[in-house]
Length: 326
Figure: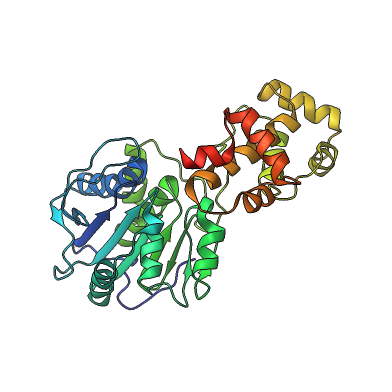
């Protein structure tokens, strides 16, 4: 979703755009690269510095990404420095950030900047600063339900990225690349955007409003389309699992045919794959949230906490409570 505003950065314009990237420790290196590298490529393609960015952290020290790689920064986040666009990139643990001084600084920048937004878990800080109240927004699909509950004043959507006035949010690395291509296309035209996409051999096959999938299947070249349909049904029914027969019926095949498709493509039965999908969703909730185990079990389609704990232990070698403590 895109709304036009008088001073929107998403409009034809060749004057340089100053961008500040505030990167938090625990961010994905993929999100960092997806945010910054398209702008670098745009400058290279055009032969002009049309995007002038700097990278900062909360305290001026290099934030460490989830892969263990630190990101070099030019200094600490300074709200008094003018910028056209502030992009906050966050990942694991970012939802718990929110020191009053930091939120106050974000609000101060937002008052003068033309755009302010969050990438992946960076949307939590933007929301905590009050910048998403009454606006449409998104975040990474793992946090979608908790994000909507935490910020009832925001119109939370499962879109890949959302632009609502001066606020923007993106759900992960690939949606962030899409967002930056949209920025480049809006400002510099389709030809430059296509040239940038070609630098990375990137095929933007999805729209901003496409829902974020739990399972990324790419273009599915060489795969039976019924496999994709079955997996999409599974991921949209994590909390109330469908039977194999029900999935097959919706996919327009018999249960036996569906089992053959899964066996050839994935090497396991639909039921085994479905259970693994639910358990991996549960594992993320165990590690990345403070939800009670009974709630995790319910969200992931288990009839009881005991049944959930047994299945989890078989899959990961330890009980969910012990994994969380560890």
